[in-house]
Length: 382
Ligand SMILES: NC(=O)c1ccc[n+]([C@@H]2O[C@H](COP(=O)([O-])OP(=O)(O)OC[C@H]3O[C@@H](n4cnc5c(N)ncnc54)[C@H](OP(=O)(O)O)[C@@H]3O)[C@@H](O)[C@H]2O)c1
Image (cartoon, rainbow, N blue to C red; front, side, top):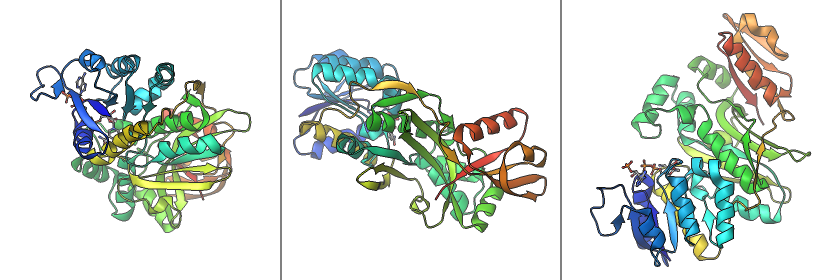
């Protein structure tokens, strides 16, 4: 199978290099920007790739929404299989692309868009064909896991942990998408689409790690708890989809607590399979390229879809999921939440709430912050 690659950056260079050694696969063209085609295999026009009878599959590793969406659509229309590592693209346009691929009888796979090398979506898609998926989730952002781990095991404060993540190339110069939880949210959107045939598009509850302080960490550690940023998704009894991202406190003995540095951990619970857990590198040139090439190889062996053409967009509903929350907030706001236990720590209150809906906790934190209060919250898990 001959593969043309769109984009020659971090992941693209890795994909090209892996294609040289992959049995049954061969690099055909690489799409680069005008003026950058300094080798015969580099081309600057998507039309050339789409019209090329020798290109069987296209790997989109450019990123962004446009022109990635137009290029991927054009490749599918031209009868090429497509694999992509672009979570933003699949989160925004997955149903249209899946439906176009089905119409043309070609493959459209996107394992690398969720968890890098971790073979999560690949196995989730297989599992969803034969088992009812009760829930999905885990640690799907390596940058924030690296930072939280550095704050907890190496006693760094938030700013130091972020600086080191940037120095090591784990965090971008603008880290907002990672630390706000948005990157992880896009991945749980894809997970829900694969597991439930429903792509949640709004109604999310999203809380990142920006509010955690070194002082908070000392308090968790005294209770033998470990903080992680977890994604959660699932289908409620009434068929609605829940999908949220939030910091969570877990016992030091939990599997999540053993996920260190910038590793990812993805998991699903099958009605029959029980808990299935995957741990590995969620980003980086070769880990991500390995997932792209694995998808191409999967297509070579006949696999065609990860998201069904029937996948529909829905609003997430997180109101039926309830959690107990650890909360730190100013003393003057202490009555705004139903605390089961609380203690005064200087001029702040720290405590654990009764069970409340995910939506209620997120809305309350938003309201208090709008009023100027500094609030940290994390769901108590395990
Ligand atoms: N890096 C990771 O670890 C990782 C992990 C999982 C998923 N991903 C996803 O993989 C995708 C690529 O990430 P990356 O880290 O490889 O990004 P990158 O290093 O910025 O590479 C993207 C490449 O695509 C090129 N490109 C962009 N628009 C183009 C266009 N219109 N025509 C031709 N070339 C174009 C860029 O060229 P210029 O440099 O000239 O702009 C660059 O060489 C993204 O969707 C990302 O979210 C990355």
